Amino acid sequence: MVVFLFAACLLPFISAGSEDQSSTATVQRLFDAMSTHDADAARALFIPQASLFSVQPDGTAVAVPYEKWLEHLSASKDSWLERIWNPKVLEHESVAIVWAQYDFHLNGKFSHCGIDSFNLLKTAAGWKIAAVADTHEVSGCSPSPLGPPAK
Image (cartoon, rainbow, N blue to C red; front, side, top):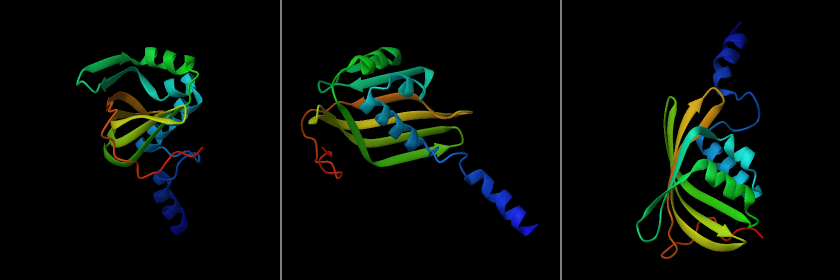
């Protein structure tokens, strides 16, 4: 009986599969989908009404409908690599924020850096991205603590 109670107490903390169900894992799955141009995998990570915003180097905020962004992802022939480090994560019940510095490499070369801010909602299917806001900085970027990307 003690073993059964112990196992029952652990059940909420054991994932049904081996896939990490955290909010940061959802963000990483998005980056993985970006690197393979898998628009369907990326689409599955967003809620249907998701919004994307990018603050350009001149301070202009640009809104991109997420379906348009997915079309661009799918059509691109370029190699994309986005990495974040030291994420600050706030989670409360079904709402989460993942905020982190990032760098972006295009075709193996550094393109830009900035701050990524992801707003996520926990659904029956797991964490889904509701909104992304980022800064798009082309100069003044500190070197990533992750080092250069693997070739």
